[in-house]
Image 1: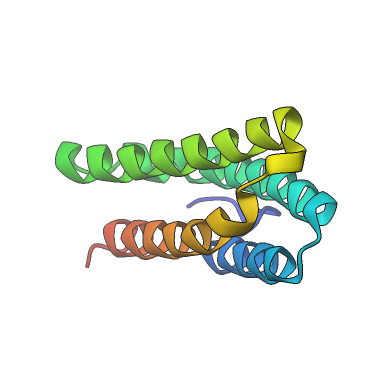
Image 2: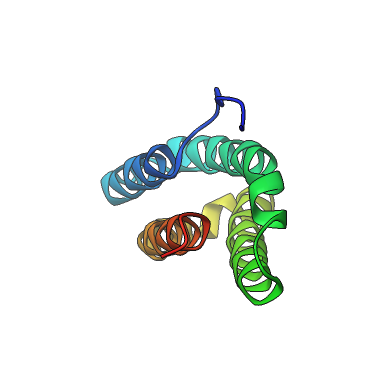
Length: 117
């Protein structure tokens, strides 16, 4: 039996990404960057919590889940890196909508795979 996590659930990550999207639409660049970093930390913690369950999946399903997780982390890392280099030309406002969709898609995929749907 897996231990209960104190970290963000799939729904919690979706809520964080939606909050990021709302902040991006309001135009608060500093707040967007802060929320991006918070989302990155929450994603990393969530993936650590889920790792043992993902490792138990059959190889094709495990590969699909892990590839999606890597893509999602890479996008967030890219946005965080941009915020540190080019905050005056930040595209994170535009990418926040895409990121919300990516988080929701990955959460659905993981839920389906981990629950055997």
